[in-house]
Amino acid sequence: MVKMLELGFRRERGKEDGKWSWPPWKSLPERYKLIGATSLAFVICNMDKVNLSVAIIPMSHQFGWNSSTAGLVQSSFFWGYALSQLPGGWLAKLFGGRKVLEVGVLAWSLATILVPFVAGFMPGLVLSRILVGVGEGVSPSAATDLIARTIPLEERSRAVAVVFGGLSIGSILGLLFAPPIIQTFDWESVFYIFGVLGIIWCLGFELVKEKELSFGNKNMFGLRPGSSDSSFPISRQVSQGASSLTELADSLKSVPWKAFFKSPAVWAMIYAHFCGSWGHYTCLSWLPTFFSEELNLNLTEAAWVSIIPSLGSILVTSIAAPFADNLISNGVETTTVRKLCQTIAFLSPATCMILSSLDLGLPPWEIVLILSGGLALSSFALSGLYCTHQDISPEYASILLGITNTIGAVPGIIGVALTGYILDSTHSWSLSLFVPSIFFYLTGTAVWLTFASSKPQSFSKSD
Image 1 (cartoon, one colour):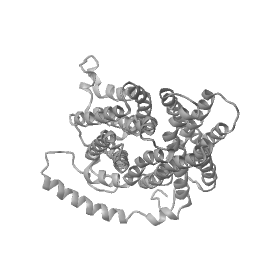
Image 2 (cartoon, rainbow, N blue to C red):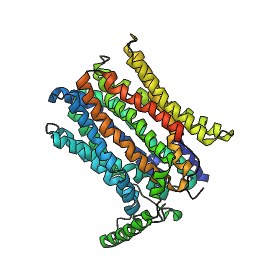
Image 3 (cartoon, rainbow, N blue to C red):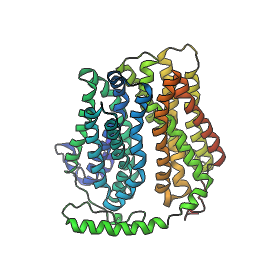
């Protein structure tokens, strides 16, 4: 990511190659500082998402939770995450992505620090994790709005890669540092430390300036985004927000909602997103526990091997994207490429889960590698499902993504909790974790191959 910023920075400096200043980022253009800071927010975002996946093991022992209760606690994050997807986009349109991002980071950081105080009171613990989900749920839309208004078109692909690449780094760092923190101090410390990081980020973000581009005055709805200038009088900001709210209500009426849900291609995307999220979220939440209990790995080993899928995903993504683009540039139909990539994304983890479920007498590390390989290959979805929104309707891509992403968060609520319930009832990891995921991967493949399309739909103005 640093190299991406440096490439643009060299062009920005032009004739000033001979000059140097300390610290190195002091002379960076403000927009690069803004993107770097936003990427750091996403690093912290996933650190605060995965910390509970590790801490849930000692917490369950201390409070005597069974798997059903542990599943309920872990799923509560996704309640807030699902509910805040669309509102996050609307708030970013009204008040600007910067303000929404700042409030989101502050909210989830304070809620993270709150966890140890309410851990013994189940309603309070569930509420705190819901608030973490709400704060993190509004952040993708906020970052997207921020990029659109401050980054030139020719730099946006790199900016998006840098910002959202922070999520993978956050997962890796969270799983890497949570175990030693817990073992050195206690499980409460991981929530305090990770939460304080977010608050420090909020304080530092105030020092980063934002300069809107002249072409960034209108967003996709044609609304004026909320000003980031804190010197505006409150009455003016309220008036501007009310005006934008009226415009938003009018513009939302023009969105072809009925046409969306009459399209088989849209329903294919919705179901595929649901199926992919089921496998992803249940594994993200339960794999450390599976590695610890079923494969007899200690806390540190269980957390660290859970990093392998994220590392593998980075490698797979670097292969899948050029693979898909190369096929399309060589004349292969776009729909065929999307179907191929998504089929790989579904059948790979399904096959690896089937192998892991069978009693083949494999040693623990081979099972870890099989599962990690399958989950890493699911990143082919970035060149399958996640490109299809733009393929079928570029102008409504963000709305379609909001719809499928909202449905895609539901498995985090249902699947994570249901896994714990089935585990308590059957004492079988195969039946609780793998069989449901295999079912959705296989049915998702069938639906995708039958109904998915990358052709512009009837509601697309590009048709």
